[in-house]
Every structure is written in C-alpha cells, then in structure tokens.
Length: 600
Image (tube, rainbow, N blue to C red; front, side, top):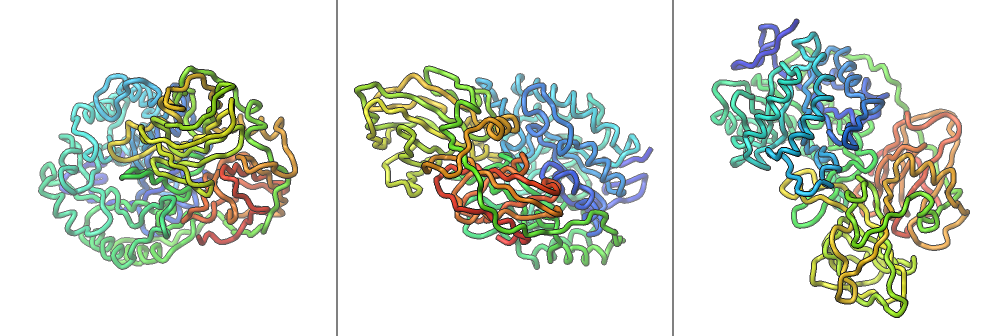
C-alpha cells in the first residue's frame, strides 16, 4: 500500500510530493461530464482533484440517503483514480461553497433550540449518524487502502465562525473512529484571528486566499504547528456571482498568473478554487447577508479556468503554460465529445395557473399561526399561505413580524404587492409602505371578507457568517392585520420536486393562454434530431425556475447579471423534449430561446 505523510513537506511513498490541485464539485456537474472535466484538469497540469461533500445533498431527510446518479460520490472518486489523479475530500458537515446553508440539511432548522457548528449534543448526534453512513464509503479509496485519497478536511473556515475546539476534536475523532487513516487538515483565511482559531493540535492548517500568495504564506508560516508544508487550500482564481450584481465577476488574469507561478515555483502546494465551478442546479444556491440578502446565481461559473459548460478559457491556457515550466504536463486525449446547439425560439403551448392547481398538487395543512417552511416539513422552493378576513372586515394594514425571503401578496387572488428581504419593494406593482420590520405597516385595503394569499420563496439559505443559524424560511412569526394578531391559516408546500411536478404534468389544469398575471407554469416542447449543450435565454420573463425533461436546472431572474441558464446535453434526448417554466412575477414573453453561446 502507498503512504502519504506530512513532514516539512508532503511525502508520497517516501518521496517529496507537491500538490497541484483543482476543485471540481461532482454535485454541480452532470455525471456524464465528470470524466471530461477531470481529463481537462489533468491536461492543465494538476495531479490532484478536490471536492466537498454536501450533507444536505445526500441526506435530504433525516435517515434517508441518496448515493445514486449525480449523488454517486464513489463513482466520481473512481473516475479520478482511473485517470491517475489524487483526491482531496472535504466531507465536513459545513462546507460553505456558496451552497444552500453551506451543506447543512434544512431539517436541522426545524428542530427547536438547534445549535450548529459547536458541541451541542443533538447536532453532534446527527453528524455521527451521517458519518456512520458516509465515511465507510470513502475509506476504501484512501491511499492507505490502495486508493488515491491523500487528505481529508475536518471543518471549513471554522475560525470565522467559532472557537469550540472540542467540536473540532469530535469531528476528527469521529472520522478516525469510522476508518479515516489519511492526514487531516483544516482551512481558514490567514487574516486576523481566523487562521489560529480554526486550528486543532496535530492537524495541518491550510489557507484560503485569492491573491498575494507570497505575503499570505508569510503570514501563515509563523502560526503553523512547527515546520510544516504550506498549502493554499482555496486559491480563489475567480469569484461567484449574486443576483443583482451589475456585471459578471471577473478576476485579473495577470495577478492570477503571478500568484500561481510563485506558488508552484517555490514548491508550495495549491488547490485552485474553482478549477471548474459548474451549476447550482435546482434550489441549491447559497446566499450571503451583509446588510441585505444577496442570493447566488444559478451559474457557479466562478470565472474559473474551465467555464460552467466545460469550455477552455484564457486562464486555463495561461495556467497550463505556467505548469509546463515546472512539472510534466501530459497531453490528454479528451474522450467526451461535446457539441453546442442552438435549437432556436420556442413558443409555449400550454399554461397552468398556480391557484387553479394548488389543491391538486399540494395538500392543505391548517394551523392557528403560520408555520415556517421547515415546520411544514419542506426544505426548498416556495410555500403559499392562505387566510380569510371576517365577512365584515377589510385588511387595511398588515405587519409581517418575520418573513423570508421574497413574498407576493394577493387579495382574492389578485396581486397587491411584491416584497423582498427587508427592503421596501414595489417591483412594478405600485408603491406600498411595506416592511418586514416589526412596527412598520403597509396598507392593503381590498374587499370585505377577502381571502389573502402569500406566496413566499426560499431564495437560498445563507452559507457563511453568523446568520447561519437564523435561516428558517417562509412566514416564521405572527402576522398582524389591522393592529392585532391574525389567527387561522392554511399552508400549501410547493417544493416543486419530481413528485409534485409529475402530478401537475399529468393531472393539472392546462390552458392555451394565461387568464391573469398570477404565478403560472408554462409548457414548451421541441424536437431534437441530435443532443448538445444549449443555453436557455429567458429575455422577457420575470422570475422563477425552469425544468428540462423533469430536471430542475435552476432559477432565473430578470435583474441579472445572469441572462441564460445552462442545459447540458445529457438532460436532453433525441426526439420530443419538454421544458416547463414556473414564473411568479407576471412578466412573461411568448417564447424562450435555446442558444449555442453562454455569453451573458
């Protein structure tokens, strides 16, 4: 068996080994393209691939696990091994990664009193239950067992969150208990107290940063536990995008090149984050909150060397040329043939109104006060609340004590307002003095005895910072109407998962034209003589999500900067294909367009 050790350098079978790695998240790439992305990583001169493992991706409900298809992390590791690539696994309960709740399962937020990322026993018990299933799947692929996994990480950027060393020790001990024998690492930014706070005795600390490598390594070195190898676990050669950004995020290539060459030339170790970003399919994008909510886009292109659709960039070519100066860079023959196809404009053939189909696709739940999404047993997507005014009463004023993240309000199924986060937000539906801040009110008016409905969207739970524990979604506290708490509610969960969408497609009420601007589903059909990567241009459409042959490819939003959604060829089929768009804002065109270019 091979051996991987940490001394003053990394040693593989007794010989010095420099890690030149790139991040590829298997959960952001369709499995048919894993081989292609890994071949291109090797072709750029990397000898290692790194990936997180998101807990919520594999245990969406407590005790129910998914390891098939896109979730088959073992197959991803096997593919990397077949190409001779070493593997770094980061299986920590929290991953950040601009992923929903940083990988923490939504069902954790339904437990009263839950404390995260610390030595809170119910949380630790859940981790142990998860690791009892996950870790044995990884153990056979360790280098000590004849595989290619050389390092594993116990937590992620913990120094920014807490200082509970007992919690870190629990993670390390639990991994060892279930069979992890390779060296363990932590990773933190080298700034302030984070680097030292996130460390654990006996475990290699690594750094996360995107520029100034020489200075950052110099900051790290005196804080290391003796004479240890220096590694940048996340070399940010790009950055992620948030909805509402003015332009797509770009790095400065000349700076990237300087830092990359410095690191390799001086024998330090590096993992490019991201080598290939991929896509936040479904509702799995994360968010940040610094004064306001900024959800991440569906695309996780990250301005990476390999683009979202797997295309080469100038950064890729530049990094490959740098690597060739210092290491042997193979010329890999790419085995996956990928073609881009413009299928053109497609008009919708049918539409289904949400209110007309609500009770068909969602089972009504009743409660005295509105339940949060999590209390209603739902993780992601949308949730709709209904309540009724007394026959002799109008809803003149209303206060949400707490509502997350974006809500459309209706009176007798006629839209009155749209509100986002804690901002006063008219979104083209008139100016209303509304707020989610307690004590501020907005005027509703409307009819006596009206039915009030509120469609709330979970825009993605925060994945970084101290709002992590504050991520319940939907209406999560009392609603005050006309100066008093309003009781008597109905909840309709709308995860828009496979089961719910199948009911809609087969049993739903579909019409040729929409009768209102209410939230609605739109069906598009087209024939494909051949399959290829394509890009859904949603110009003219407001906000919502899109399903391709039943697969949720993610959210769209007219505010940009993203203007197209990536559709990998494996999601299409020869012959008839179906796209369904759920649009919430009443802004919809007659057509969508499938293009052969990803340019935003």
